[in-house]
Length: 452
Ligand SMILES: Cc1ncc(COP(=O)(O)O)c(C=O)c1O
Image (cartoon, rainbow, N blue to C red):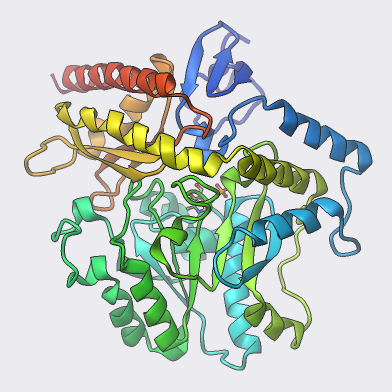
C-alpha cells in the first residue's frame, strides 16, 4: 500500500478522493502523523476533544472500567458509571432536566429526543401532535429522522423519499439576516417566526421545536439575540410545543457556560448532549429530560420505545464521568470562557483579510465566514469549493478546522469553525492565527489560479 487512500487500503474512507495522513500520536492540542508532521487540532477533531489528546486520567478511567466489566445490557442492569454520570450531569443542567438517557452518537440522541417528544404526546392523550419544526440552516445528525430535522439539502438528495416532512423557519443568523441581527422586531431574530409557523401548521399538530442554542457548523457559531430563547420558551408554552435544545456541539462548556442555553435564561423541555461530554475518549451522547415528561411514560406504557444495544455503555459512561469530573475539578468551563475571550480578540484581526466576511462566536467556539465580495457579502460560487480548498490548505499548514458549505442560500456559502480543546494556551492561539493566515493565502491563490 503506497498511500492511505481509496482503493489502496481496505478502509472505506469517508472521502474517497483524497489521501489521509496517518496519525500516530496526540498530545494536548496537537496531533502527529507518521512522517512527524504536527497538526494543531483547532477543532478537537469534530468539536469533541475538549480535554485535549492523550489525557492520562481519561485513559486510566477507561482501562479501570474495562477491567471491572466492559459491557452489560441496560435492559437488565444498571451500574456505577451511568448512575454517577447522570447525577453529575443533572447538577449542571438547567431547570428540571435531571433524567439522563445515554446513547452513543449525537444523531441517536436527536433521534431519541424527537421520538420521546412524540411518544410523550401520544401517551399524554394528544396523538395529533407529530410535527417537528426546525431551523434553516441547521444540522442535527445523519440518521433518517435527525437528517429530516437538518436543513442540509446536499445530504438529503438520494434519500428524500425516506425522510419525514419537517417545517422550517429561518435560523437567527445575524450576518445573513436583512436586519443584521439588530432588530428586536425582526420575526427571524426575535423568534416570532416560530409562533407564525405553529399557527400555520395548527398547534394541535406540532410536537416539538428543535434548535441549537448557539449555532454549530450550520451557521458558523452564530449567537441568537439575548431575548431569543426566552421568546421561544414563551411561544412553546403558549402552544404546548416541546422545546428541544440540541447542545451536542455547543454544550459541555464549549461556549463558556456549562450549557449554551444557560446564557439565555430559558429552560428547554428536552436537551441532547454529545461530542465533548466524554472528551471523545468514547462515543457518548445523551437525552436529558425532566420528570414531568418521563412520568407520563412511567405512568403510561412504562418504557421509552428506543432500545439500543450500546445504550448506557459502561466504558462510555466511565469516560463521560471522568470527563465531567475533570471539567469540574480543573474549572475548564471557566477556562473556556476566559480563553474564549483571548481567542476572539486574536481572531478579530482576521477580518482584515480580503475574503473574510465575518468572525463571530462565543467562548471557545468561533466561526469565520468567507465571501467573494466583502461589501455585498456575496459568497463564492459553490463550484470554487473555497471552504474545501481552505481546509486542505489548513491541513497542509498543520491546522485542523471544520468546514461548512451552503449556509448562505442553501447551495453557496463557505465557512470554517474553530473549537479548540479547553486546555489551549495563549501561545497556541497565536499559532492557530498564524497558520490560519497561511492557509487563507494558499486557498486564495489556489482559487485565483483555478479561475484563470
Ligand atoms: C448540533 C448537532 N447535532 C447533532 C449532531 C450529530 O451528531 P453525530 O455526528 O455524533 O451523530 C451533530 C454533529 O455534528 C451536531 O453538530
